[in-house]
Length: 403
Image (tube, rainbow, N blue to C red; front, side, top):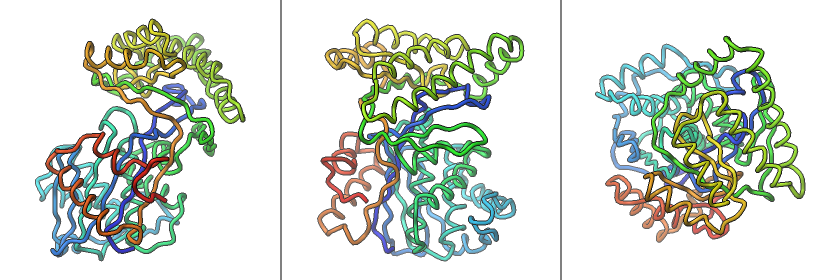
């Protein structure tokens, strides 16, 4: 496909099964409808490849002659998705030579350049500009959305017959570039959308929530946390008190399985889902992975009769998920969280579209001008989520012909 064109992929949340999934228990992850990464691919006049990611302040151009010195990985993705270490080392050297030292920048550049060398090594004169409405590093799968959007775009540029399984496979390679040994869950949800029930070592089961999306409020506490430390702390508890912690993990497994059954019914019992959210938060708290900020949100949602709240992800701060059962006091809830505590809130639905494309053929001159303006202004940090959503967000009132 010839540029310009757009790809997009959603963020995700863990609905049930944080921490217990590490011990081989079931968990449910779901895509987030209104938190997405957008990639705009445009032609350029120079003989180079440019990556601009304003959200993390990464702007870099690589000349084609420097990229051509790096060999392409020998193994095809259909045969082996293991990172080619020889190629990886040369890309890492190029990144160092480019004076990209920030770890976040280096990981993003490595993901981008490795996928580039795999899929479109002989292509040049292109600019890749990404914007995201999802907070970076908040445990919402932003890196997977980036990997999915890049993989989809590069497969289009390579003129390959594309399906979601192939996109997901390449996105998993992108995630390996960033995380080393990812579970593959984040890229799977971001590719397919909806929700998935997964368990380590077994094939994930896709759950269609399109007819019964869950209305939620995400709260980003901005409290930094170390996933590695939190997982390690749970492991320590498990090793000291196995007879106590094992039943907790088994209960979390039962919650995920029960919820997957309820969510796939024609008329789901959302009151039961609410009860499971409440129980799951209590179990997570017993594992010591909650936080005082999470407790404040849980208490406030209870006081205002919004619905139950639980942490999502590793805990220790990060994000919470509130199931909206009664919307009467949602505005007051949001205002208190933002004005009193300084948190960010996003009211959205779970189970939206996965990766999407707006092909070149569907972009007319006026739309291209709007896109050029938006992405150019994004590079100067002159756009916010509302501006991005007004033009780019897929859905019933979408302005672009997403496919």
